[in-house]
Image 1 (cartoon, rainbow, N blue to C red):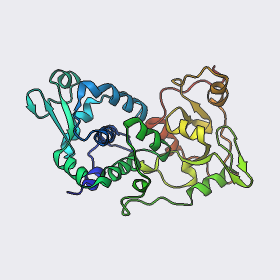
Image 2: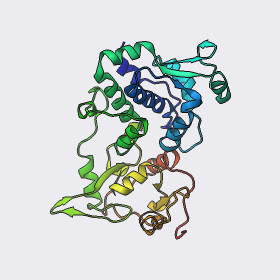
Image 3: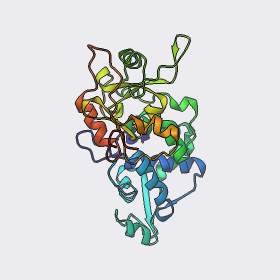
Image 4: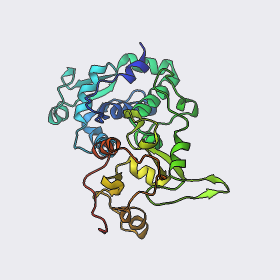
Length: 297
């Protein structure tokens, strides 16, 4: 059984680059729980809130429910569900899962394979992270699901997959003259830039190319907020700030809220700005809620 291949082929609803990370998030959560206690079962009513938080924070902007992956992940051969009545899921209805005492766990053959090969868990987790989430979120997502990965487990596990262009970072940072496109930060130690990163607008995991018109030079703070859907890029290449963001401190107002409506810093004249198709993808699939009006407190 090739568990890595199964991991890459989880059946997900998809259309035009739509994000549907419900199953990957549940599988990451189950791997984290298995790592902590290989004998644990996940009763739906006990883990529903945990799974809902993961979907709210790392899933698409639209409302969704953890009942969907809890039921449907069974079809991928990596997950099983039992109820108080015996084997099998009662369906994807929230009430059905709660009232029947539905309990999920990794499939028996997968549990056996994970015990036999201690490195398999880390390799599956890394695949799920690489295929469905940007690198800026990997560390905190592992924390959120209770996964501890060894350094060796962060290496590429499938050389046949699409390869990243190692020049992307330098091309994007050069295009934006080593300044954050949102706030203009340009810190260096000597000649070496610090705290600046190349952000994909349309995530690489969802077909986003390693190209300057799909990139932004962002400081570490604004890169994280961009990938979490707090910030975006709107028409006229102006910064969007989500109305859902709440911050009362002077720092939050200055570094986030005050960005609303500002024009991007860069890129250099003659270089292509972020393509409309990539901006639109981020607005639909990552950005949360409606944008604040410029100057709104």
